[in-house]
Image 1 (tube, rainbow, N blue to C red):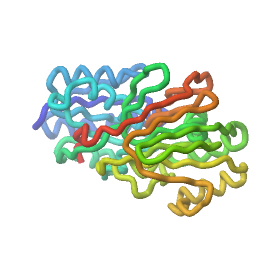
Image 2 (cartoon, rainbow, N blue to C red; image 1 turned 120 degrees about the vertical axis):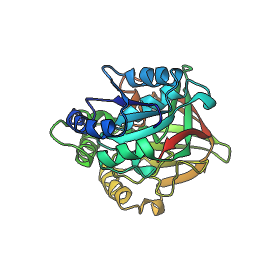
Image 3 (cartoon, rainbow, N blue to C red; image 1 turned 180 degrees about the vertical axis):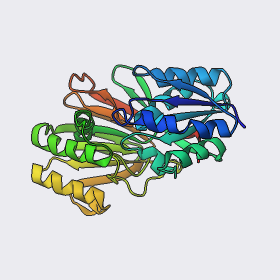
Length: 303
């Protein structure tokens, strides 16, 4: 059996992950054991993953949601490709969108068996550099504008879980936090400027536990897809979100989609930004510029 480090986020899915992870211990012992590490503060999973890579672990398993996966990949990306452990995932969060995109079971027990015995498959990783020089890696989606505010508001919905958290946060954002911005975009294929409510850069097809913004996106095809939503009314935005749910938004005239490998954007105001559900720039943001680059097949995910 490979040398495995399990990185567990006990507060994933608003603290509901603790009980699930505890129930998985017999599976680990049944198959020879592994080393466990729990996270206790933001960014801790990144530190543990980096140390695990330096210590020669073969597989590092992110047990949590997309935010935990995000932290783990940022730790793994600090070591050279030939020394980088494989990434396993046991989805215990609210959205679990990247796990969905690579075929990880939504049953934690089956997902753990996949992580322990599955085959490595190279997936693309994104790198962003903001206007202050900060570098961050991401693996599922970068959200700018509306959906970042939804992510912030979702942390304030304690009585629900899963997709319901995001849907209630969407309604709150439409009602109280509706902030358009003017964005200039340059990719290897095009240049444009528009007033937007939302821009999402997608490696996988889904975010928010059920919103299929880029249904044809694949995390192993060497391409990212952007999805932009022009400034529209609140009722139209609510209608648009229903179209994201049933994958029929591509024909809407105020939505634009295209593939890219490199992208630079600048805004007329500070941007709200999340990466894989982790808020990088919230309501106190001073970031108005991003550079995005695709790193093809940069990480081996166990699937």
